[in-house]
Length: 142
Image (cartoon, rainbow, N blue to C red; front, side):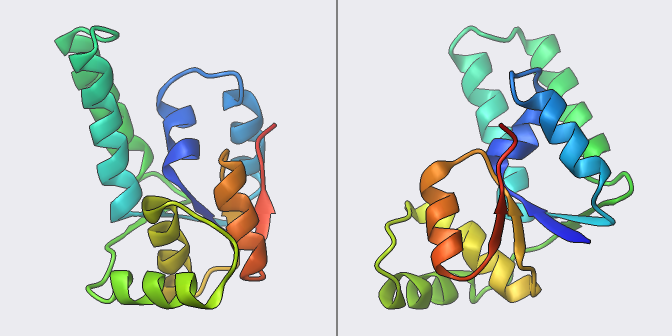
């Protein structure tokens, strides 16, 4: 079964976090996992943030970026480029829903719509509620 993962989950594959083992279990059951170019960019920025904040030295940050790039091209992962109408779709979703969702999370939901995906793995409760309001199935790794 196909699955879209957002950045909150992608980072659990790059950094050991409390939800990392459960994330791995859920991912192991998916036949296809979509990672958007948005999630990829956000993950790179989060690695950079940890380095800038002194949580990672340069060599460790580079290791994490390499791990990220390895993960997103290994089966069953598929890196998909977000199309130009992503913002327009996100705006239409926001206008037609009463469920609050921050901008970047809303862009992930728009990517799901564009890619024709209905299952989301996220660790973000607000995004999960907005996804459910759109009729998406949501899995949380906790």
